Length: 327
Image (tube, rainbow, N blue to C red; front, side, top):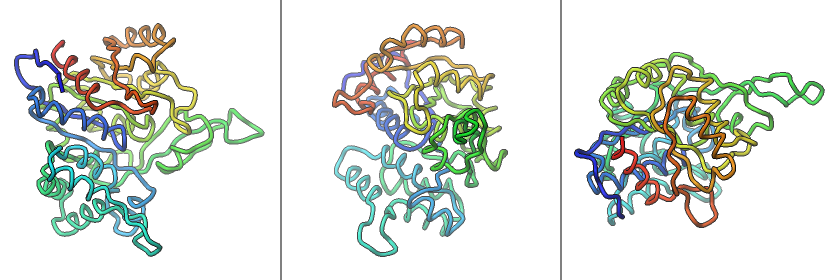
């Protein structure tokens, strides 16, 4: 990978998000650890999942949903035989017809260590050491969260009426238009390690990912939001490559930023990163929105060229390196 490093020192980076979006971002940032563009990397992960293996374990053991944390750890595994093997083991989902069907090995490992050690942060650090992960993975909050959304368009006789939808899966798959989200509990406990990571970072990355259920929730946790507002770290918002059915149907790039600003108007954004092809005809509107937010717009080629709506790890890493160098 070629990401010519022109900054005079490596950077401390904290990446906030969840699911496949955070996995893509961390995979790219891990490449920058290899070439010393980044020397310290921390992932802060959403803990509101209520579906699948994570939801089942959350309900049975009253623990944080481990799935997004597991995906973040897998993204930080190295490309050598050890890292690749453990990443695949961590992500392995059981088949068959019994009670274990659908559970993921990494989810069980994480929950087991939580029970043994009694501490979320220590347990995740032990999993990271086992995997040889490059960087830390921390939960957004120390208690499981539920996402609620006000959704318009679910009542046929009154399309403007608002309906409250509860649960990450339910919000992510709603057939209406999400107008706002909230968290329950509204003021959860946050690990001091999370706040320290934000305070000490040079850069904070928000996105890509499911906008209402993986990205915006970080801004609704009071301690997290306050840390992001006061930190000297420069905040980069990484836009998605396409709208997402259920959450952001009909959204363009500028709409994603408008929703973010509505939920966190006091947040200072340094840079907005968008994919050139994905922006398309919406470039002028996006540039206007970014300027209104007092940020700079970076348009780069960061999408995979296979027709999927995925970020290419090498291209995204190169874009990150240029952003960190040109600050």
